[in-house]
Image (cartoon, rainbow, N blue to C red):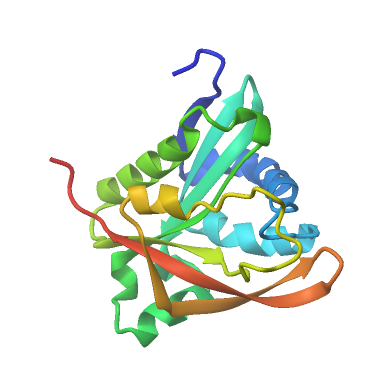
Length: 202
């Protein structure tokens, strides 16, 4: 790996507490761009991250440039997350307590291209395996129309990367989340889940 690349560490439990504000700020910065167009809301961030702070089995995977957080990825047992995240699995008769849910992966643009996205997935999957009792990992991505006029020219979605990681989009598993969208105010957004079986490492 390029020696200029950030260092990446996985933290859990009390070790996560000092970094909650940094993760919130990073989410508001990165998710301001397409496709989330998130206007940023400190109260929303507090509520969202509270689930991770409460869960003793959650994980933060952080990328550091020195002492500065430049990337973050999160995960927790789906059973410890809010009901709207659990509902699409319950509707498909998937055992909620067997699913480890991945939250965001956010990285400042200047640090992309160093393989950090793969590290985010590797360390979260390793955390879920180490905990034991999980058959599946999953995350959700916002759905946007291909012809949305706000889509930046030349934008590449992450679908190819996710497929290479072994994740499959599940069209029948969609939830609705509300957030403050730039230029639109509070909007209810559809997010569809991607899942992958969590195999034991050879």
